[in-house]
Structures are given as C-alpha cells and as structure tokens.
Length: 345
Image 1: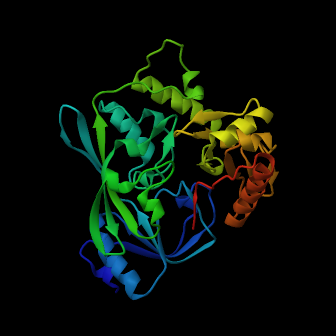
Image 2: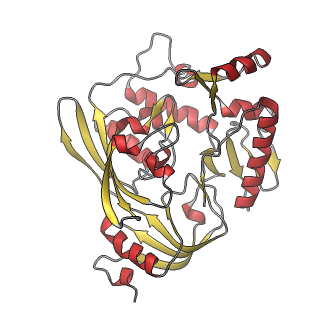
Image 3: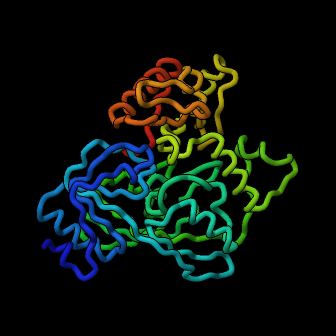
C-alpha cells in the first residue's frame, strides 16, 4: 500500500479513471492516477507520494473551466471538499467559510436563502468554490474577489498549509495570484466577507433591460433575471458540452477604441480602468461570422458567439483548432488579440 492509502483518512486512489463526467466540455479524458480529496488533511500524504515518485500533477474541481487532453499522466487531484458555515457576524459583515468542492451556483442560492445577498449577479456560473478565486470569476459588473476575506490552501512549493488574505491574492480581471503561480496552490477553503449594506447592481445593459428604468430590484429578483439571461444565452453542459465563456473580454487603450469606433460605430464596449476600454469579445466574434458555425464535432453556440461547444466526440485539439481560427480572424479584422479563458491541461 502507498502512504496516501495508509493515511488515517485516506484519499481514494483510482487508476485510469475516465473524466468525461468531470469536465463540462464532455471530453473523453483518462487520469492515470485519480485521487479523490474530501478533506484538506488528505493532501499532504498525497503530495508527498507525488514528490517521491516524481509524478506530474494537476487539480480538478468541477471541470467547468478546463480543456482536457485524452490522457492525463501522473496524478490528478479531484477536489471534493464540501461544507459551509457562518464563522461570525459583526455590524458590517457576515463571514462565511466554504469548502473548495461546493458547487458555486448552489452556494449563491444558499446565501440568498439565508439573507446574505451579494452573489446574485454571479448566479449560474458553473464550477466550484475553489476554482472561483483562481479565475476571479465575474459577471454583470461583479467579481468574486470583491467578497473574499481570505483563502486557505496547500502550498505545494513549501509543502505546508497557508492562509492568504485578500490583498495577497492579487485579484485582477480574470486573474489572481493563484493563476499567476500555476501548479503551486491547492485551494481548500474560501472565507467570504458578505457586507450587510447591499445595493442593486444592474448597470450592465443585458441585466438593466430586465427591469423598468426606475426599478430597485431585490437580490432575489436579480438572481432570477441573471438565471433567465444565462439560460437563454448559454447552453446546458448536460445537453451540449461547453465551458461557458471561452474568451476574455479584451481590454484596450482608449486610443485604439476611438480608432475602431470610427469604423465600427456599433462596437460594444464597457468602461474599464482609466485610459482603458473593455470590448465585448462575443460581439467581435459575431462580426467575424462565427456564431452558429460548426467545424466537425465542435462549433460556436448559436445564441452566444463567446461560447464554444462540443457536439459530441470532440477533442481538445478540435476545440483549440477552432479557437485559433477565431482568434486569427478577430485579430485580422480588429487588431485585437483574444485570450482563452479556460485552463488548458
């Protein structure tokens, strides 16, 4: 028996585990060694074993933001750490501790049911809580980094558990310290700070259209509106494989934006940092004629050009080949380089 198997609360080890059910693209992938992690305490023994055998390794949560190859050599850690609890509450905020394996949308619904609004704009984003801060998920003007107090993780470099306060996480647009240091941290728990002072945030056009001009919707009404929008725009991974938004919205200098606007007067964009403008990647792709198009087993979703889909039998190579065609065409037409959002394993 291995050390990980001998540990007092051992991580279950399964050789040659199929991961089609663990990635929303529905790609056929096989993990050479799959470890199911149900508690942080299981991680040190697994990581010691990985180091001793000099195995390559990676972490997989809900598989909603990944592109998996057909074979994953070495070790794959399946993070299934559950649980959520209110740690404490003061006049300003409630502090909520959540396991990395909790499904993100289920947490959003739970916080609303328990009188802790704030996440409603982020409803129906697929994936787990542990993956959310790595990508600093966001939607309709809200990013998860705003609500994080601290993150507990295992540092594979120092072989020790660490707690990173919000400021150490270096959150940016679809970015974080964890993303900048791939293969180092295994997120085990996220502590959120849920402010008690709440205000509706419906300034994004698609969301604003769901309400009258003078509306002051409740968190629950915003939640339902976001679910309605996303259900219309985004395909259900259970029906057709996808990873949600495939490209980041590019941020460009105002000067470049003004130049593009002279040619494309209906260019869709949003204000960003001073001197910058964020373009709608879906609009750029749509203008290049990709919406609804198919390339073999993969294609672009008919209702949202930002979403690539696997119609069945597609591979990572198929998806990345289509992505390259899109990136090249957008760059040729607009002079803008799109960045792929999912992690490529």
